[in-house]
Length: 271
Image 1 (cartoon, rainbow, N blue to C red):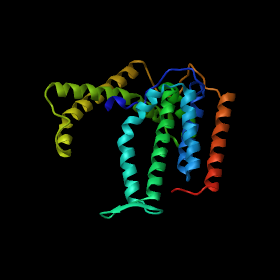
Image 2 (cartoon, rainbow, N blue to C red):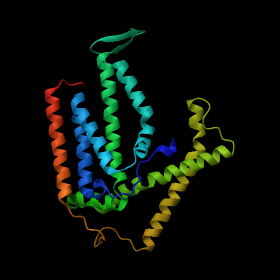
Image 3 (tube, one colour):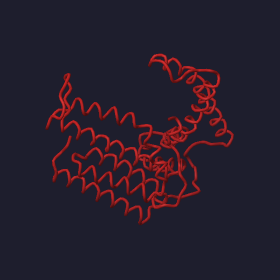
C-alpha cells in the first residue's frame, strides 16, 4: 500500500498538458476543483468525470500509474459510501432492518460522492505528473507575487510548498525500507487489534523522523554551500510565457464551468 502512493511524482513526457504553462495548469487545476464541488446532478458530475478522463488521455500518463494513485483512497471511498448509504434518507426504501434503512437517495448520494472524490484525485494528480517541481515552484511564486505588497516572502513560501511535495515520494520509500527492516528483525506489524498495531508503528515513526530531519539538514547545508539566498535577484533559465494553447485550455475550463452550471439548472439535484 505504501508503494501505491504516487503524490508528488513527475512523469516525463511531451504531451499537451506537459507543454502547458505551469501557471495555467495551477489555475486550471484549482478551477476544476471548484467546479467539482459545484456539481449537483449526475449529468454535471458526468461532464466533470469525462473531463478528467479526457485530461488523463491527452497527458499520456500510463493508465496503470493513474489507477495506482487511486488505490490508497479505496478505503476512504468505501467508508464514505457506507456512511452515505446508512445515514441518507429519502426516496424508495430498498432495505430496512435493525434501525438501518437503505434508500434510493442514500445509494445515489454514495455513488455521487465516490465519483466526485475519484475525479478530484485524478485531476489533482495530473498536475504533479505533468509538472516538474522546479516549474511548479516558479508558477506558485508568480501567482502569489501580489502578496509581496504585504511583505510576505512569496519565494520562501513557494519553495517550502514544493519541497514538501517533492519529498513525499522519498519519505514513502523510506517508510517502506524501515518497515521491511523491522519485519526482518521479527516485528509484527499486521496482526493484533487497533491499539497493538498503533504501538507497532512507533519503531517506524521514530527512525522516519530522524531520517526526515537529517535530510532537511543536508538539504539546507547543500543550499547554503551553493550560496542560495532566495528569490531576490534570482534569474531563471526557463522563462514562462503564455501561448495560444494556454488560452485555449482556459477557454475549455470556462466552457466546462458553463456546462456544469447549465446541467445543474436543467436536471434535478442529487445532493
